[in-house]
Image (cartoon, rainbow, N blue to C red; front, side, top):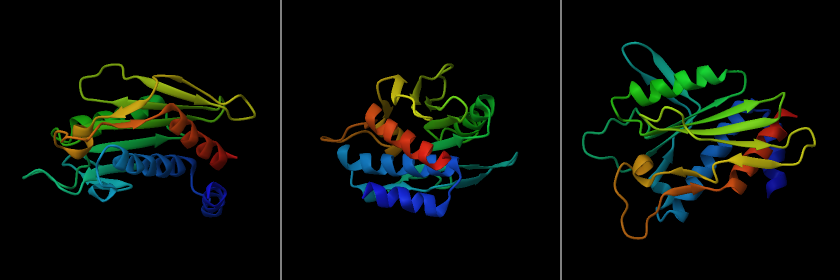
Length: 193
């Protein structure tokens, strides 16, 4: 199954940042069932184009629950992801500032996937409003190096951030493990080759 997926990605010849967003996006939806939520209740919007009076912005991937709280706008995602291949870390930070600060508190969390081709590192960073220095997790292993991951143990997407409600009995946060992040990184490195 994995070989078919890799062949499909190579056939599509997707840009590296699109591959990162797609793979990470699918992983989050897969995590829904582990978190006690039917995967059909988490809508993977893919790229989301949002308009504000100052500008329009499109993220690389996003999620929103299918059941929205009363009065909640559906054009803003609950969680937004930006994947950077040629963008600088400063650009990714500005993108996250837009999603978190211009959405009138609609976007609850941001995630960046910062791909550094020369070093073979991929940084996964989670962003929350009011967190000045977000934690980063780095995956390394391109160009024949030993595949490793360093930084925070896992990435946690709080249940309330993605589903826009408190957890019910049997529901948990969405936990993306180090091993799963390394799998996403391997697919990105494959797309870079």
